[in-house]
Structures are given as structure tokens and as C-alpha cells.
Amino acid sequence: MSIRLIPLTDPDYRPTSRRIAWLAAEDDGTPVGSAFLRLDSRNNYSQLGELELTVHPAERRRGIGSQLLDAVVAGARDHDVRTLLVDVNVGSVGDQFLQHHGFEIGLTLIYTRLDLSESIPDVPAVPGYRLISWEGVVPDDLVQTFTDARTGMDDAPTGSISIGADVWDVERTRHAAQVIAQRGDRLSVVAALDETGQIVGFTELVVPGDGKGDGQHYGTAVLPAHRGRGLALWMKAAQIHQTRHDFPDLDGLLTDTVDTNTPMRRTNTHLGYRPGYEVNRRKLDL
Image 1 (cartoon, helix red, strand yellow):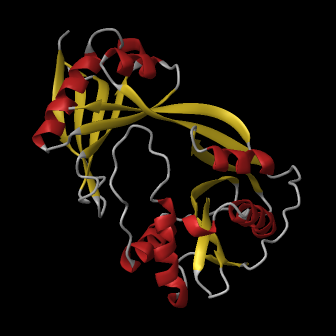
Image 2 (tube, one colour):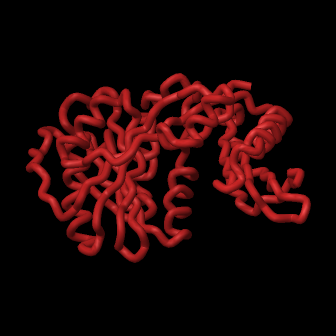
């Protein structure tokens, strides 16, 4: 049988992005694969497209993946995308497929997990700072300084992937927390304040609404002028202790770190996070 590619309308529409999709099917309509291209409407990210591609294992090596990829590349060019990105487990069939089709490794992410049943080392407070915490949307009196502190992520390692500054404003800060709540999850934040009362570092954790399974770390950042003093280690240790108290049925905490981010990898290792698997973020320049 020959393969037909069917463009689809994708309902996964978000405030800053949307997806276009293709279904690969036999002549009789039997689906054998699919592909999605996420387009970002933010100015700094509009040149990037995120690819998802799946072919049923029994239907591989028939050229279906290549046909889907060709459709995605054409669609990306039609929407002025200059670089396609896709995350894939290191050494997997998908990793080999992408390498064969010219996708280079932009960066490698190391996924680690902390078992909350294990003890963590004591971490002393950092002189000259204090920690605060909140759940959900940041309090109004802290929203601006919390938004400003997000610039601590601007120099996070991105490998060979060219990404502009990730611009945040107060509206986006509130909206990001609201989205997490709307899907039923719980956002917890621990932040470090300097002697002037400004937030100079923070770490975010998202926990399933039922408080079970594993929580997922989101951003952790310290403003450049306050680095090298142990703030990230102190904040994350405090967050672990608080999470154990607030969510006693939670099993563990998950995080991912770019392999070249040595300071954060060292922090996580010190706290007891153990390696799980690695993911290549591959890129294709169009």
C-alpha cells in the first residue's frame, strides 16, 4: 500500500504558540505515523520550530518517517522557521534517524532524580540573605522583583542553538503560574532576598495535583552578581525540606540540566540527585 500524508488542524493552541500536524495513513485510512510542528509567536523564538515525529514500530523502514519529515521541513520554511529542534533519547532509533537526516546535536540534557526517602546533606544559610517561599502566583508585592530575577536565566547554556533573550514581564510571570494551576498541578517557589529585599535567586518546583509520584523542577537561577556564594544549593535544599513536609506522599524530584552546566550539575549531585537518562536536543538549520 502507498502512504498518504493528511494535514490536520491541531487543537493544542497556546497563548504564545500553535501546532500544525500531519497524519501518515495507508490507502484504507489506517494511521501509521504522525508529525507535529510547533510554531512560536514570540519574536525571540519565531525562528525556531519544535518537531515531534512518530512512526508505528511495525511500519518503520518504509520511508514513512522521511516523508513526514519532508512535510515538516516544507511547512517550517513556509512559516519562516530557520531551525528545527527535537528532543530524543541518546542512542535511540529516533536519535539515529535524525542523525541520518542531518540533524546535529545542539545540546545534551542530563535527566536526574532525587529519591525523597533518602536523606540530604545539611546546607548552611548564606550570610546576608534570607529565603522566602510561596505557592502558585507570586504575591503582588514581589511580582516585579521576581520578574526581574528571571534575567538570571539569560546566560543559561544553550549549546550551539541560537536563542535570543527570553523576555519576561509581570503579566507573563503571573500567567505562567496560572497555567500550571489550571491544569491541576501545584507550583512551589523558594527565593533568596538580599539585604535590600530584592529577589536575587529562585528555584521552582511543580508537583502533581494529588501530591503523588514525582515533582518536576522548572527554573533555577541566581543573578550574576550574587553567584559563587552557595545560594542555589541553599535554595534547593530548603525546597526539598519544604516539599517533604508539604507533600509527604511524593516519591521523588526530577530535573534536567545541560551537560555543560557544571555548577548546577555539581549542586544536584551534592544534594543526592542520581543520573537517569540523557536526551539530545538535535537541530536542523533550514
